[in-house]
Image 1 (cartoon, helix red, strand yellow):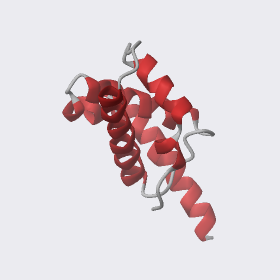
Image 2: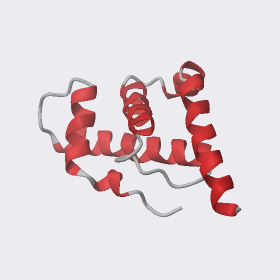
Image 3: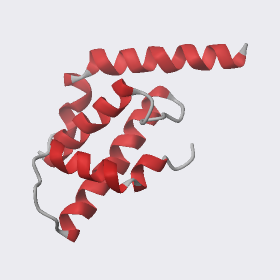
Image 4: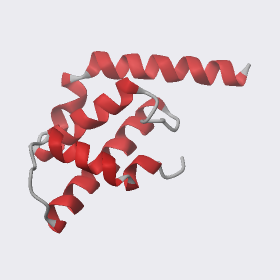
Length: 103
């Protein structure tokens, strides 16, 4: 999978900061949150098995922000278990899309 463009999106970084109630600008904090964005993209894309357009897919973007919140609170290990229903919906959506493309 190619690098997802949302990883480098400064506007999304600001959204992610708001998600975790970061109201200050600090290079170290922004690097940390950018790392969480990258990790979340990887987790979700690995789970569905394909690249995700986080700009078009509201569920995926919401899950990414949720992942960032879990990571910010040092609770990534609970992300999948606590969001399994939404993750399964995302898997189903992309699984169906992959089936259509292969036909």
